Length: 199
Image (cartoon, rainbow, N blue to C red; front, side, top):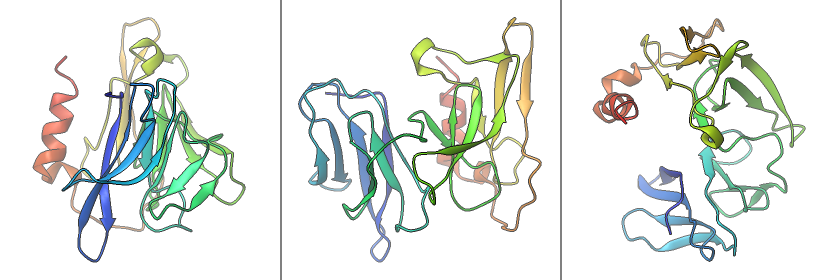
């Protein structure tokens, strides 16, 4: 019943309890939000389809924590079960990234980075389109790498040119009001940057 994505987040800020949002390709479980410690289902959107993609990221400040969606979720869900939007239009299901210097996540798909418009719903603003570049892995539409490589906590985008002769590294030029330790100081983050590039 595996899907191609899984996301872990803090479900209860008071206790620090973790939960997992996952999609399933077994044509019955759809998308599940589970207690990470016990596996108990907190919320589920069942589906008879192959649900290979899902995403979780804090894209709307009107709801605490992350928002979640999948290819069959029927909209964007809050961790408390409320419906943040009845559509997934305007949100990609590939990756999230820290790009524009705000505390909300941006969405990365293919050679683009977008910002979800939580006021208008169902729309997004393109922050970066790496013209002349291509993504990898066919339908997966992945860049070569998204990671905090320069250490200011925002992430950079590394993509190949369409002729396969060069790599391009894109860095956000937005000013930042917030200061954090670089993500590279987190051993899990640092090892993840490595293991994402070994196969």
